[in-house]
Amino acid sequence: MYFKKLVFTFLLFASFLLNAQQKVVKTQEEWKKILTPNQYYILREKGTERATTGRYDQHFKKGIYQCAGCKTVLFSSIDKYDAHCGWPSFDRSLKGSIEEREDNRYGWKRTEVICSTCEGHLGHVFNDGPKNTTGKRYCINSAALEFEKKE
Ligand code: FE
Image (tube, rainbow, N blue to C red; front, side):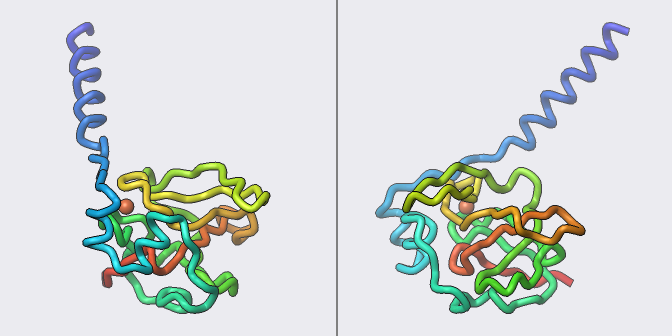
């Protein structure tokens, strides 16, 4: 009985270690070298692209969306929907890939969404998403994403 418990604890710990994401940390200069000026503005300076100008706003191909900064897979096309807001919208993110933070900039209380691996700014999450699924709208900048086609 004791042995079983020990094995179980070990397996739990091992799986925790395997799942623990390696954080990506770079200096401003290093980010500037690998990102376009627009990607840098969005991801590292918490910028927002103008509505309807992003390449994934009206993009509904099957595949996955990675963080443009560190390539961590963040969203699936399965969860993408047209919110008619001018930015790519998802009703959920992939488990553990993003973090939410309180954002009170401009005297406006919002929830910021960042990549949990590189802490790049992705966009915001609002509670006006589809009622029949999660009710969430992850409103994400196209420039923060990189699409990869999957059949
Ligand atoms: Fe990232």
